[in-house]
Image (cartoon, rainbow, N blue to C red):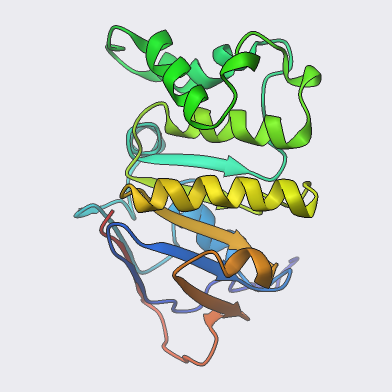
Length: 221
């Protein structure tokens, strides 16, 4: 900020094991979004180490990080980020466009995932024809198409009513029970309660810990 350096994350040491369902909570400006961006390979840390599935991704190039994101991580965002000119199934298939050799049967796989999230009968609708909850289900299906080891959810129920939010969280719970590792960023304690483990970020630190950089984030996934 001008000439002032702001340490968004200050020495967070964190390990997420395969099959974990972890919630990251914190107020605006606490550092939770920066931590999420690092875990999702959207940003790289200034110092410290990030190990994802045994690989140090801390200093990877943008191209290398793009491959890791597409093959390992699925994202679900508060604002859905669906392409409004594309159908639901086309949105679900979008991540496969970046695969070197897309496998056969992708449309069948996409339809099966849409069945899993209760959206099979909306496969050929456009996003504007869907409710908010249905759009988020489509976004979840898109996140699943490449069989990610890790799903990162950024305030996934922020635009949904209480009933629809519960339905979306039940989908995440079912996915986690099948072995998918999930990291949920939220400010809502009711949503965080679905997770098996919750950490609180405050002033760039895990609340209650005062470790100093360089720190380590490890995702076993």
